Length: 78
Image (tube, one colour):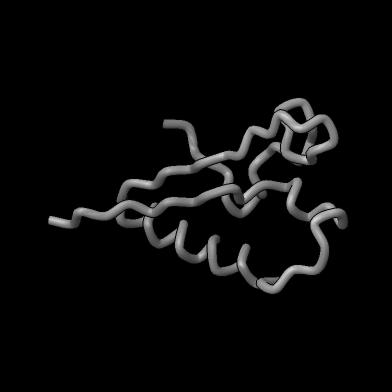
């Protein structure tokens, strides 16, 4: 029996905004997609966490497009 879950934190479009500066992990989404596909194939638990900023200029506010999950990490229904 496996007692593990894949925890995806803040994999959101808003972090692609230039205001966040240069990234040190440009291949992160590719690795996330591979991990996510493997966990889904095995029907293992996956938890998606999404940052909900209250800052007026944040790209991660729920009313901004950057709030959405990146395509590589979009949760499935259920």
